[in-house]
Length: 111
Length: 115
Image (cartoon, chains in turn blue, red):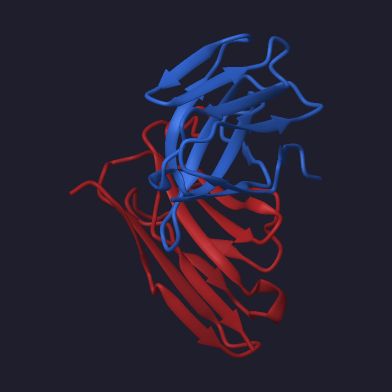
């Protein structure tokens, strides 16, 4: 059972555009993480959010955790080619070691 | 350098031929886990270990075995591989036993093809 759905699945935009990626679930998560994965490499953690309504910023990336802790979004301002990659959300339901990954959003930013 | 290493990086094998993918971390992490990544399905957890000699099933454990005899090593064993186990495999570790909310550090991946 896939608990985390990401949208869109694919996104191709030009440098300088803004975009938002969504991560939705019917389950409540105690924390939610966003990872970025580049070709030939493993995912790398970008951020962890733990409080409903929490907003975290990482340079041009803004992450928000939904008030009910069932969803999250990632907003990128003025995208750059270096933002290209696969973005994965991952939720922890509170079971100590259980991390469930979303289906992923593949982003391509062109010049 | 702090890292998670996996070997081999690429492997092509035939149905039924036992294989082992090794995973090692040099960060003294308690938690280690194996995932497989397939198009459109994201990463799915196969097995995890909260400490030495403590392992448990993830979402897709069928056809796989693991062991955790030492803190740094967490090998993934396919006793009788089948074509549906063709996938990209990742090992990950995190500092504490509660790996779910910790930062997980991933290895570079092992691309396995079973013919």
